[in-house]
Image (tube, rainbow, N blue to C red):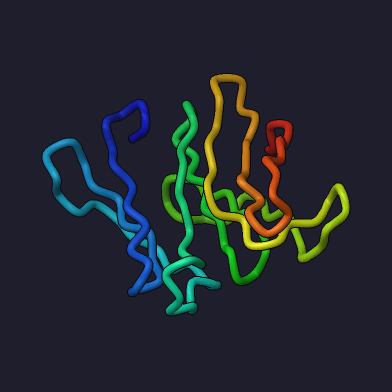
Length: 118
């Protein structure tokens, strides 16, 4: 949920994010590339920040994507790897009040912290 009361849903099987207002009315949606897997362990996660940005994990692409409220891609980071900059099946995601992004890097058995991205 963002500050305006909008709710964002990761509609995995249809490969999209849906946006609903506080009264549960669908007010927007956009496609998300990289949610093709039918495996239950590779499902994406979604988080929001205090500026109405939406962050999604793309486990099969080993990356995280930041969207604005209209679905425009603002930033993408991550690639497959086991080093300090790589990701291996990112799953859980959270954003703190300062805009830091925390990603559960499940294949590498760690949590990765990213500084706020513009």
